[in-house]
Length: 333
Image 1 (cartoon, rainbow, N blue to C red):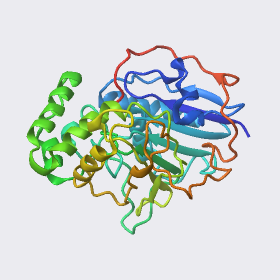
Image 2: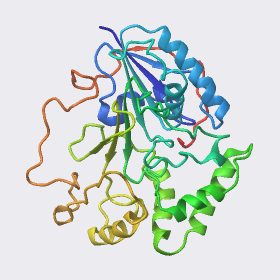
Image 3: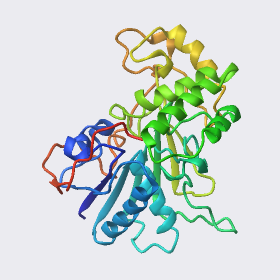
Image 4: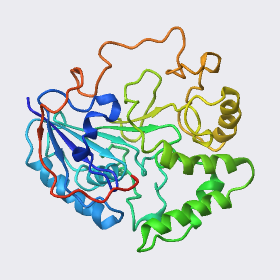
């Protein structure tokens, strides 16, 4: 069966033009013979652009045969989520065995999404998340969805503490100048939160830059990941990838004692439905690459890629559809 990877870009980036589909998630997205298609939506801030992307995605899905993986990164994940809410809730037109969704860095994920249910942000991004179940509890998501986030990605793993959430609600409605509005909003979040959760607020804003833009060395099937099935939608799985060090300390190995101290403070602002592992501080050194490893770690042979029958990553022997335009470079959101 033919396989098509539909790439929905983050804000400001043309992933296919940059060849990022071969580098993200340890190169596991593309397999030999896959067709790679970039959804040509205007990936700049604005709910109108996301809505237009939904229509483009719906048309592409209707015209594509074989197995399909929809890969949405950041704003692209919002396009995919909005499609599931608008077109995916009815009886599936596309067989469920053919269509799968992989979302990363999703700002409207149910657990930790920065924009989730914050209506003051609804002019620059989608905020409603996945569709609600029916009144009898029946799920309205008919396709398998993996929503993958790195711990401390400030857009997809944002603190849930009420004081921080209230500040997000109070920053004011988004304006026609989303870039400057976002800068001011994030400054307001950091400046307004004092006391026990001040570190968590600053850490989240730093994570929007340092963690959200780096999904190269993690995959949804890494052995240290923590998984949670949505109680309303059995086909939706949320996956967290543990992060070391905390963004508040920069990058690299740093000093384990500092990470332990800051992580303990930061985690008080989170109430995830899962418990994420702490780093194995005793074995961290300048040469450590697996900060969460233990002596009994293992990796199953079949956990090496995204597709059901994984193979080694492959470089451009695939079919690429050229993009009509390279949008201005910027920071994904």
